[in-house]
Image (cartoon, rainbow, N blue to C red; front, side, top):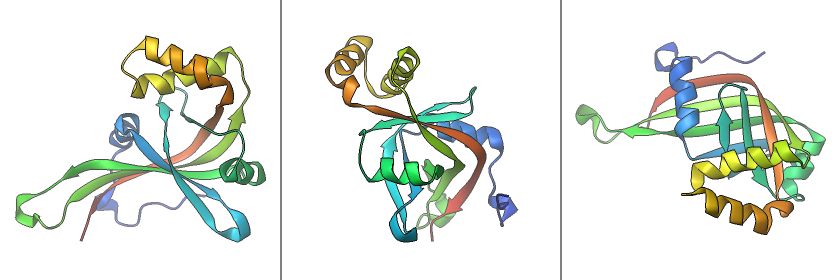
Length: 159
């Protein structure tokens, strides 16, 4: 169902791909938008490697929510670990992880609050700030969950 990477020598192994997904701070979520146009937006996220899921938060209403209600199929991409090789300093190497899956909205509750805290721990320096922020704006936040169906990773040379 998902296409294999065409240039096999550029393919990253699955563990390295998951590590990139775990360590990156931002990803780009692509959904099926209006009139067949894709809609892609950067998001902060949390990758739960054990559960095989990606979580992020956003507004309760808007383009992204409308698009996901129309079609739950998504693509999520992160990239990083840029390196410069001395022999080709003009062409940096970048790793990328591309995830395909299905995204749905999570209901409020204890589990959703715990997931929101996991996302926040990635970005906030301490628990006190996390608790304060969730108390202040947690009720206005919608949580999203991507059930991962396929992951691939590759090293790209920017030329």
